[in-house]
Image (cartoon, rainbow, N blue to C red; front, side, top):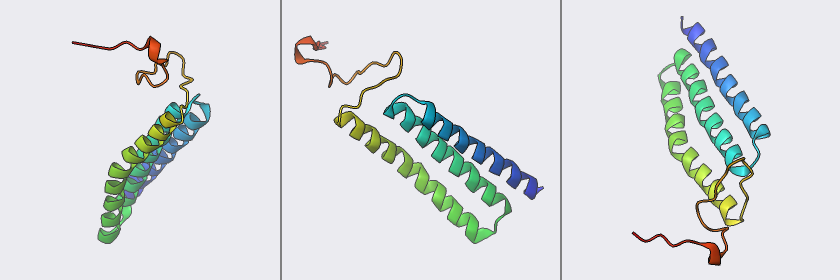
Length: 116
């Protein structure tokens, strides 16, 4: 039974990571590519770690849990840093209907000040 769980989770993890790679190739701009990359890495590796937990012993399971915990903290931070770097160098959003709500790319004379 454990072998079937392992096989299922490996196929699921590889599928998630493959869909993430397709998303990186097909998405139009840095921000949507970043979304596809971070989700596929996080979810794909987590599922692969779960598959490893299905067939492993205690020490390996502990290491896999530590890898999962590290990913929980590192993936959002790394994605934020990459997105922030793209924003600082004025990387444009090419997605249809994308709106820059930061106001960084709006000329000063066209900015609205919001007062409550």
